[in-house]
Length: 117
Length: 113
Image (cartoon, rainbow over all chains, first blue to last red; front, side, top):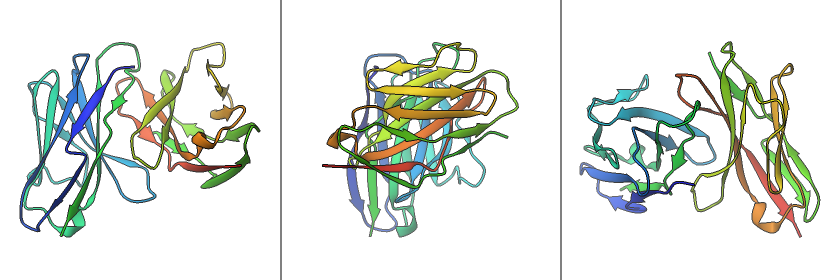
């Protein structure tokens, strides 16, 4: 299957700082990328959907000014957690879809574990 | 609205035995895809198997098979000959045409030696 990378895999930051997470599709062009958040022992919660070159679509309850998403190219999307607080500590996972196939299988990155002190 | 239900929060299976993980779904869309993902403790989501709503045969991928019963809206995952490395969280997911993925709450599988 296609490969999606995420960087960093783990980040610890102080409260009030901003953290950027990168998601890259390594061997295919991702027309759509998705950002998920996962709390311990829970399922994935979709935060936003981004299409290359356009603004992200955020799910209800997700603050777009706090979670900035940029999908500048067909292989890169970034999620910036601005002014992070301890409650933002979570596992963030991106996925990418190449636009092929009827149901557009998603390929997931390995995730980023964010800890805000 | 789309919804995925996984009623088994945790399952145990003996090594080399088969195990079935339950998944039921709800959608009014006649066109949809069903997916199973494995999430080990490392956190990565590993795609296992896919079934389209119009597929006539149940999907199989190696030791994984999907028991698709459309009328009952169920898409159970069957893992044959369980291995210790199969211990992980398993998520059932659905995507209707033009819609986002919806994930179930997951089932934690523990394979016993």
